[in-house]
Image 1 (cartoon, rainbow, N blue to C red):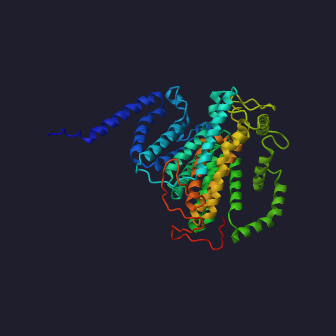
Image 2 (tube, rainbow, N blue to C red):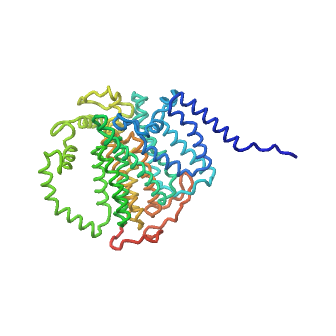
Length: 530
């Protein structure tokens, strides 16, 4: 019996290369960004066959957070960074890139669904490409799912009341994707041992955005001679604060020289990006995170000393604010920032655009307090707003204050259904904090609490509910909170999950002390309580 000789392997590679070249040239005729599609397709095939899900999820996380977020007009619309083409590919509707009208969704949605499909397929077929993952608490899974069904309820109610279906889709799109993003993070994160690599990925994205912010603000803007309101985009405030929290909480939970040096260097780089981006909400969020940490953490000697110092300095702070209230710069610049938050853009005693919009949203909510208007409806304008339709035609479908918007469009029922998972996330993170003797886990718990606070502030002040950046960061924190709670014994190990999984590390019972690293020792002066 004879066998036909196999064709040389290099011929297969040459054929594949030829196909990629032809497909790339053909895609470039449609749009320069579409030229990347063939190589992307080959990369996806390789991921499906060979790569653990953790790595493409890490890559997608970095890209979402680091590239230009085109829906928010990055760099105030004056300058595309070198990462702009990737941002355009990720976040622009594919119908605009491919000229195929049916593709009315961005590539990032396709990647999320594709990664989730790969994960479910591998679990169903018992593939060994991915290691087992620690399960999530059932209540957390339930409230994350509830948020999706609450959104669907608001959509159905709004359309049945005559709402605009086409505009309604973009009122809830990113929020409805959150459960799917949570799912891919669940399958990608084995347990708390993967938290450091995910945190470093976010930090890398934050440093990338800080570099873009500084370069644009310090080099491009002076050369162009233009005025800009921001140098990257609004949602980057959450990425910046996440990086600051990692540096701060890691040092506070385990003070040592290496953490101090790396933390100070990171804080300086990120803070420069924040200063050029000039988002007041970023500073408010960071102060809120520190306040939450102050209230949650135990009371060692250093915290008691700090608290006493605050009490002694309170009269001096009052004098400082009183003297600097009418100043605009110099040593009193922080006072001016605080006053601008209180007075708003309209000045003292005047209503600015945001104030009027908030009053209109509250008025809309009072008309439909229980179920809201449903999606697809504009908020009411009992106090007329300046007409900005020439730059933002659908502005009454997308209020800046997304929190009040949820109340207006969903009433108490929709608002509670969508946001209940935030409460459960913080609850589990705080319980995990007080049950862990590992500094890395305690620091992660505090970062999670701070990230949720930042998300709430972004939703309240900068339309954060329709931002992929905010949604990805929040989804990561939801999953990390659940896995930390199970690992530390803050929540019992689920007997079963929606997709069977096995913990990657033993779960200590409540009260047990575990030291996986030889340098981890309990702090004798800190009493951990339940």
